[in-house]
Image 1: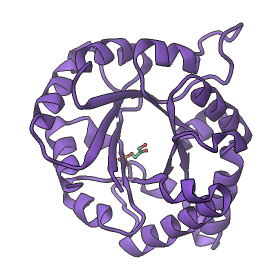
Image 2 (image 1 turned 30 degrees about the vertical axis):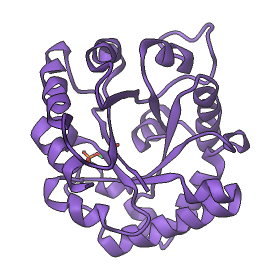
Image 3 (image 1 turned 90 degrees about the vertical axis):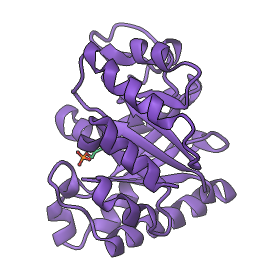
Length: 247
Ligand code: 13P
């Protein structure tokens, strides 16, 4: 399956970060890698980066959206607005959104529908905490989140799933190849049970302290169809090195 290497910039980046985007774009030119490349900057940079990358191999996405198309939701941004400004993807249900903003899987499912209706590709995040893992609840937590975050209306529409163990995010700890293989297989099995053939073709990304030194090993694990990269996506040379590991 074609891989997707996606950078989640989280709340990082200023207009001057267009230099990083320029470096990534030039690094992608002529790169013969069977993978898509995506950067998800904060809202403030979406329009600028979408303009800067138009016609290049680098796609631009957002990090969340509201579930409504428009209305009295101060401070929020709709999926339609994201599509209008040039975003192609939107990350939904990231653990930091679930923790900081109390997003439940039912909320995520509504946002996923909004994204689909706006023509965006949602990247739906799931993952267990360290306490969940130590209690032997990884499979249950991940599959419960997955089931409740994916609305039935996704059938027939492109979407991506990201497995991000919370204990591996920003900690320098990475799940082992065995741990990743086990969870990704559970996710693949659940997607296929629910969406049939479509579930076989859904890209399942791994996220959590991915860096140039571990990317090749992680991307070589069965059912790992790409990465969702935080810290290492902020530096063009690191992000490009991870991208090249996908080839
Ligand atoms: P890090 O790569 O910084 O661990 O972040 C992972 C992540 O949360 C991507 O969405």
